[in-house]
Amino acid sequence: MTVSLRRFAVSAMSFCCAALVAGAAVLPAFAQTSATAEADAPAESPADDAAELETVAVAALSGHQTVLSDIDFLGGLAGNPGLSGIVTFFSGGALEVLDGSRPIGVVVQTDGAQFTPIVCLPVADIDRLLQVGENFNLEPIDAGNGVYELEANDQVLFFKNVGQWTFAAQSVDALDLAPADPAATLQSLVDSYDLGVTLRAANVPEIYREIALEQLREGMEQGLEQEADESDEDFAKRRELAQAQVEQIEDLIKGLDTLTVGWNIDAENRQTFLEVVAIAAPKTDMALAMTAYRPSSTGVSGFHRPESAASLLTHGDTPDELLEKQQEQIEAAIATFRKQADKAISESEEGPLADPDMREALRSAANDLIDVYAQMARDGDAELAGSLDLSGEGWDLIAAAKVSDPEKVESAFKKVAEAASKDESFPGVEWGYAEHAGVKLHGMSAPVPENGQARDTLGESVRLIMGVGNERVYFAAGPRGEEALKAAIDRSASMADQEVMPAEVIVSLKQVLTAAKKVAPPQQAGMIGMVLDGLEQTAEGKDHLRVTVEAAESGRGARIRYLLEEGVLAAIGKAAAAAGNQMQGGAPGGF
Image (cartoon, rainbow, N blue to C red; front, side, top):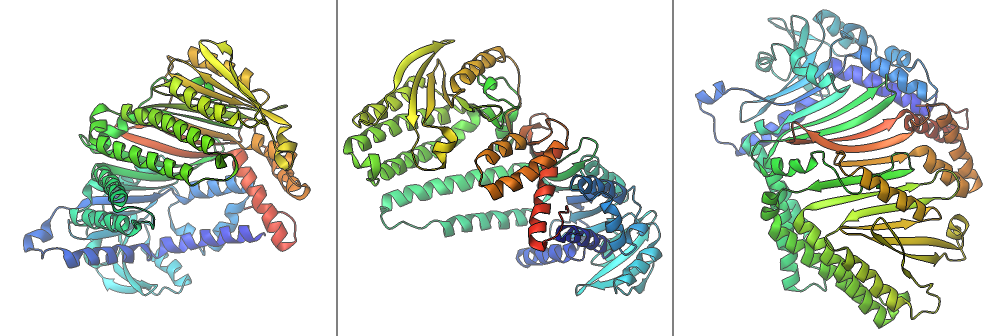
C-alpha cells in the first residue's frame, strides 16, 4: 500500500469517526462565533426567545453506499480497485450503523442572535451508535428522556433518537429544534452532489453581516500604504478607488440570496466536478450583474476550439443601469491604469527601451490601447475567444476580441513598429499583405533567439499575424496560424446566430503532455510518458479539464463548474504513484 493510499484510508476512517461524534469540531466553531456576536448584541427580552428560527446553512454528504462506490471508481483509475474495502475496514464498524441509503448532514439555524447547529445522522438504533462510539473511547452518559451525553475533544455533545434519525447538538434544548424531516432538508443537495453546502445568506442576522463587512473594510485599510514615490494626491485617488471597490463588494454581498458549493463524483460518466452556484436576491445590484451570464451569440465563437490543447471563450453585456452605478469607479480605474503604465514605461531604460524614441512610441501606443479598453469598460460589452492547437505536426495560436475602435489598435502597433524599424535587425511588418472576409491582415516573421530551448521548440522564427475587422481585432501565431485564423473567422460568421454559454475554458491534458514530452529533459520525459500511458487506457477524448460559467435560477444567478474527466483523474493517480514510488523506492501504486 502506498503512502497516498494509507492517507486516503485514514482520512476515510476519520470521516466515519467524525460522523459518530456528531461534528465535534464543527459545533464548537459555531458556538464561538455566536458568543462573539452576542457580546455586541442587545439583551434579549422574553419575547425574543420565541423568535422564529431561520435556516442559515445546510451541509449534506451522500449515503455511504454512494460514497463507497465513488471511492472504488477513483481507486480503479489509480490502479487500486476495491479501495472501499480498506475504508470499510478502518471505519471501526461505523458504516454498519449508518443507513447507507440516506445522507448525513448538518443544519444550522438562527433566532437572529445566535447559531444552533444540529447534526443529522441516518441511525435508527442509537444503542448501536453508542456501542461504536465506545470503540473510539467515547463513553456515553445517560442524561434521561432518551438523551445521551458524549465528550469528545473536550467538548460535550448530546444525542437523541427520533424515528429513523439520530440528532446531535451542543445542548439538550437544541435537540428540540431538530428538523422534523431531515431527508427533505438534505436530499436536494445530495441529488446533485456527493458533498454539498448551501449558505442562505439572506437569513444571516444583520449583526453578522456587519461584522463581516467591517473586517473587509479593515483589510482594505491595512493593505493601503502610501508608496515612497507616491504623491499625496495620487495616494488619495488610489484610496478612493479602493473604497469604491469595497463598496461594490458590499453591495454584492448584501445582494446575495444563496451560495451553494458542491462536489460530485460521477462514476457513470467517469468524471468529477466542483461547482459553485450563487443566486442573487431580486431587485439588487447583484441580480443585475447576474444577467450578464445569460446565453447569447457572439462574433468570435469560431475561435473557441474545444478539440485543441487549450481554448477559451467569454462574453457578456453589463446592464446599462449597473454601468451607471459603476461609472465613477470605472473612470478612476482607467486613470490609475494609465498612470501606472506611463510610470512603468518612463522607468524602463534597458534593452530597446533605452532609446527615448522607442519609449515615446510605446507610451503613445499604450495610451491608444488604454483608450480602447476604456471604451469597452464604459460600454460593458465584452467578447473574447482564443485557442492553442498542438496536435499533429506544427502548432497554431489564434485569438479574437470585440473592440470599440479596431483602427486604434492597429495604429498602436504601427507606432511601435515604426520606432523599432530603426534597428537593422527588426524584420519589418507586411502591412495589409492580405485580406479575408473583410479582415485586413498584417504579418511578420519574428526571429527566435539562437540560444535557449525556444529555438529548439519554435525554430528560427515565428510567424505572427494581426487582423483588423469592422468591430474586432484578430491575432495568430505559429506555422499553421494563418490557416487557422481564416478558418476561425469563417466559423465565427457561420455561428453568429448560435447562443453559447457565457464562459468556458477547456484544456486537453493529452495534447499538452504530448507536446511537453517532445521538449522535456530525458528524466522528465520518462515521467510524462508514464502519465501518457495511463491516458491511453481511458476513453478517447476524455482527457479534459473544463471550467464553465452559465446562468442559474432563470438568470438571477451564476453556476461555475470545474470538471475533471477520467483521463485527468487517471493522470493524477499516475503522477501520485510516480511521486510515491520515488519517495519509497517501491512499485507504483495509486491514490
